[in-house]
Image (cartoon, rainbow, N blue to C red; front, side, top):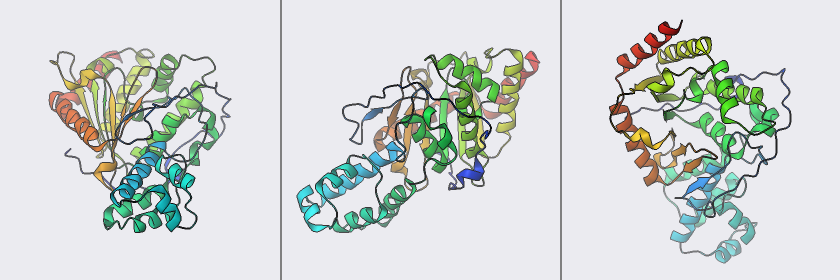
Length: 340
């Protein structure tokens, strides 16, 4: 993909806004079921959604899985068994090594270094990337800790990954992407998509607005969004809400790190017809990029590098089929002016 990402900042607390006067109420308990192969890298991993409460806060599960899978791969390449590793390294029991490789908890930086040294890994870039995954896995809770009852494992993953991502590429066919939504627009969308009783809509609106700090921090995410024209011309929340939302899009499109395109209603068959998805890119290594694929009841994380590359090619095809930048801005402006 032809985007030049910027290196992210870890200044989460100052970068995000949150409403300190709102006290979230307890969210309903919702079971979150993982796929039977969710311990293995290279599968589509089913997680919960914003409707579920977050059971634990042990760092992003996506990153833990990737770290564990890479450590397991290096151990197997070194020809070592669990027994041999536990016998060689003090404090590395078989159960502990199994938990690390299965992404079942936070991994200490020292353990990563010791394991990679034992496996005779000489890829300095990989070593740096894996150590960084272990170190930054501790950066959790932060600004959204008081909203923990409303943050599912999936949303927790997304928040943490956005905080460290250098680029986000997204296609949305039904509505404006969350990183570009106004509070009023987000409120309407959340009301319609979160149908379970007891959902704290205002808490989820606050969380969504706080996530947008990734676009304006000192080293912001490079966002490329392709939005279907149907979402631009929809009547979400009425004329006033949509007019404000379209103005927000125009304001955001003026930022140097944000690119917005519109997929026209009359476009021929294109790759976006398969549904919405978001690619999160990271500066450490391209094989750490991940894709979030939107679903009706739950979403999927795509983690295998070859599959992520496929989505990258898919997004390139989508933005090639979409309107050019100037024409996209013209459509958004015309629609905004028409309803005001």
